[in-house]
Image (cartoon, rainbow, N blue to C red; front, top):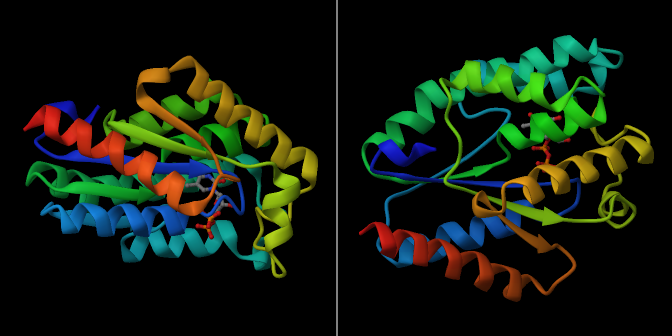
Length: 210
Ligand code: TYD
């Protein structure tokens, strides 16, 4: 947990086409309006080196990238991002709103690629010095609906449906095992209703801490 630092760390997770970015933006706007110091960021990425790693893992130019190399690159990008962006922001008391975090590695590389959820989780915990979000919001979407939103697909989106089914099952399994740290919402609900439920939960958490 970021519990030992004064800030609050929320990650948005989910499969392709879950509209995470819309919800992440709406939450950030609500938090800023409520007077919080908010840092919006995303993975993989967030620093020049992590953005370079993002290019390698996502570009169709690198089709056939080895699965373990892929897992290591996501973990490396995460370590860099946490050290340079997330931890400094949490230390000064900011709310960090991050589009994807460690559970994306567990779901995509651990379950999707079949590399094993525990090993992949341990790798990211090592890379980040054990940083977990205070809350992970899982926007659950059937990949049959989610993927229909894309015309051009990056290297991960281009994986077959069975891969995305394993990713979805992985997210749901991890969330079910840790109900206190996850807010699971059906991504098919109206945008405003999802946004309200996320904001209610996080504003209540922040009030409890004040
Ligand atoms: P992005 O364009 O940010 O996708 P989205 O809008 O769906 O968040 O691309 C990130 C892709 O990388 C996405 O397909 C999920 C994948 N991914 C992993 O496989 N492992 C990870 O650890 C992370 C952070 C992302």
